[in-house]
Each structure stands twice: as C-alpha cells, then as structure tokens.
Length: 113
Length: 110
Image 1 (cartoon, rainbow over the protein chains, first blue to last red):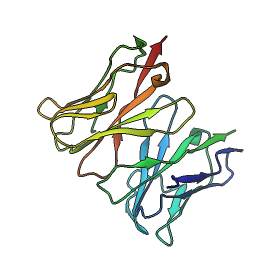
Image 2 (image 1 turned 180 degrees about the vertical axis):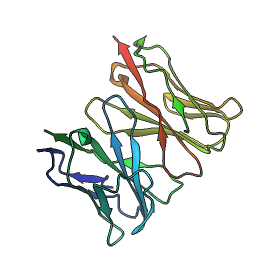
Image 3 (image 1 turned 60 degrees about the vertical axis):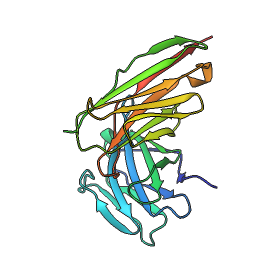
Image 4 (image 1 turned 90 degrees about the vertical axis):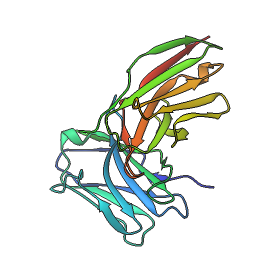
C-alpha cells in the first residue's frame, strides 16, 4: 500500500512570493491533515479535512494561508505571500476517519529567504 | 492550553538496555495516545498507539497508559543503535487533531 505522497520535497523562495504544497493521502483515507513542524518542536495542526470539508481550520493563519481538497482526495496548501517565519516543514497526514491512527507523508521543507 | 510534556533529552542508553520514554498530558479528556519515531530530516513514523489503561506490547515496544496520573510511557527493550531518533508523544481528545510534545531524543550507544 502506497503511503502519503507530498510534493515538492524541498522549496526555496524569496519572501513575499507565493508557494503551494500538494498532498495525496493513503487510498481510502477520508481524513486529511496539514501540520507545520518547526525545528525542535512537535508538529502543529493547521487544518483538518473530513472528505472535502474543512472541519478544523482554527489554527490556519487565514490572512496568508489557504487550503483546498476539492474532490475529497488530494489537497493543496498555499501561502501567499510567504514570510521569513514560514520557514518550516509542512507535513500532510491521513487517517481512516478522524478517530484513527494518522500516517504522515515525507513533508515539504520550505525555506523563505 | 492543552499541554503534552516530554523531557527533551538526550536520553542515552547502551545497546541492549531498556529505554524508557515518558510523557505527561494536561487534558483529562484525552482518549487516544500515540508514539511516533522521527529520524533526523524525516517525517514522524507511527510505532505505537494505546487507548486503554494498562500496557500494550508490540515486539520490542511496550506502551503504558495511566489516565488517572495523566501519564503515558514507551519502553524499548533490547535497544539498538537504529533506535536512535526523536520520539514524539501525541495525545488526542475524541480522536481528532493530535497534540504533540516536543519529543525526546534517544541515543543508543554501541
């Protein structure tokens, strides 16, 4: 069974530029999560989807971050414009429903210069 | 703020010994508890989960949960150098978003 797929794996951009991350969850997993992980910290939830509905986006900085999961499968997380403080690893995870174990993708390491 | 606390370490144990990793949490409504292993530069990998008080064993790993004390631990028996990594404790209320600790760095020395 294929795991969670994310792309790109690495991204370097100038501040104020836009950036987008893509995630394809494990087949059949209807719950998808985007987390942010800073160095030396545990992952922090940005947004959770149940199928195509964003059911928890309370921690998403909506002034610059947006996300979508149009067909309830893959998802895109966007930052526009990026700031220096956005440099981090962006992790996507999926699970079989909201009360099951979560499996993480390899992450996208973002560097904002 | 719902806290998950872990000693950052590093915890150093000799090869073949038992490594004991500990985690406390503040939210008494927490229902699901997870241990993830994260190698440097890699994403978290689920190694254990536990939902009920007591012990749960899987190979060399044992997770222990005490909800009354709000305490969860991970024991790694016969520790190997390949077990050297950061171990993240994660806690969930009603099984939704995971609240992670900062992780404990484990070093297994040959």
